[in-house]
Image (cartoon, rainbow, N blue to C red; front, side, top):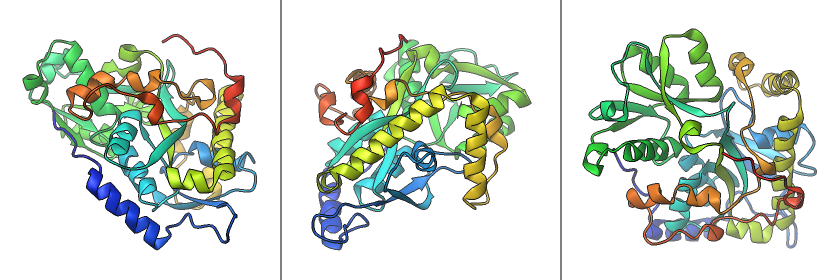
Length: 343
């Protein structure tokens, strides 16, 4: 399996940090003692992110979101935040660890996506494919949205736990594809298998002709998959803004959790149609759940879940210390948490 290159080396992170400090970046307040009230961010095509929903519901009191484009992947999104091209970004937990260990001064403040029995990532092959087991993937190509993301971690763990050696795992090739193109790449035979999640997965299954090889929730149970992060200097300069954002996202998670599905889809449809980005609302009909438990509260276990993968892939050395990567201090709903569901 291909290993992804470090998102930024420690030296690069330091240089980027110095450059950001010199240039001011997008997070510069208008005067001494004032906090930033406009947050630059990247969105996701044809979908509504939790911050966008929070803003529409009025949960980001006094804050404005400024869309600067759509992200191509989680690692790219948090690197943009780390270099002050945006103010916050979200990515797979392992990518957060990797970027922080490379020298980027970032901290996770709230979980923003995950897998449960309704919403999960599956790995699919054509219905008539001879691929049935982990060993059948040796020498094959799997389409994923990015290297160094959750799909790579899940695939690596699946192959390892099903008896493949490291040498055999390296023979499984990961091919980066835009999520919207993965279904057709599987059907056309450009890849032997592909990662599909959420509404894209449900649309593909509704069309027929694909078969599930395995899913992340079958293998790991329910789990939060990643966090929204801010730069540490941004947090220090804008604690009220970060609190409003984090608590607003947590409230949006609760709203999606407790609101009837039809009402959630209607709200998403309204948001997409009103923002004028020439997007489609077709896939919204397949939305099932937010997939994030406990108001986005982060726990050590959300990081240690991936410790073996991070070590096996050579992305960390020594023991993982989860507490250095996140805080719940800005999530006002953390004091009203509910017991974690058993995976």
